[in-house]
Length: 63
Image 1: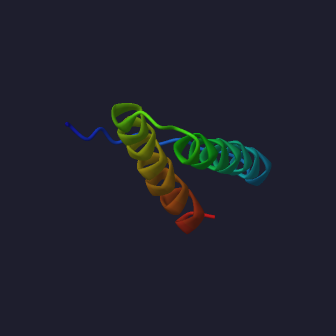
Image 2: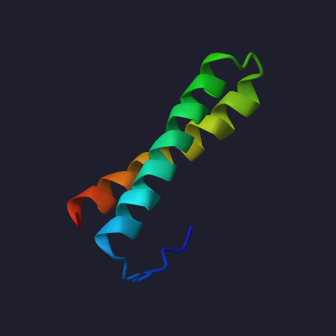
């Protein structure tokens, strides 16, 4: 996978909203993972959750 750098300027209010939306999606993914029996689908959901965690951690560093 090739990494692409993206620079985005947000107000504090916008950053807070983006963080809130990403955290809500992360919680939803964790619930989906817990209720999924299909191994492949669970793996896909876990990868998405890990990506969200990575983005959230970088977003919080710049808070």
